Image (cartoon, rainbow, N blue to C red; front, side, top):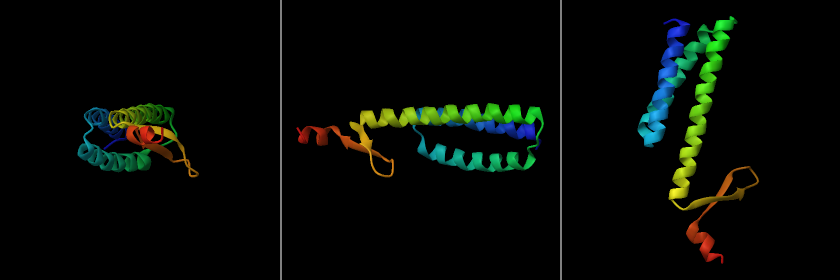
Length: 107
């Protein structure tokens, strides 16, 4: 495959990933992650220093960031539905959460 064909394939995978995030389809997301790794490795092998290549990679990076933002928003929504709230961060900068029940017990 050519660089451009691989870029289109990765773009399509990222679009499919957005749909899977919206459906909270974990199995599909896991499969897509594997597929994206394979395509990205091949893109890395074929990339060069041309402006066209840089532009294509920049567009793919925007798509990937949009997916990351969507996944983060979906995770926040699920936490909210489950009654979990972020209460801070621990020493390793990991989020510390507590359920609504835990918060009420402390009152």
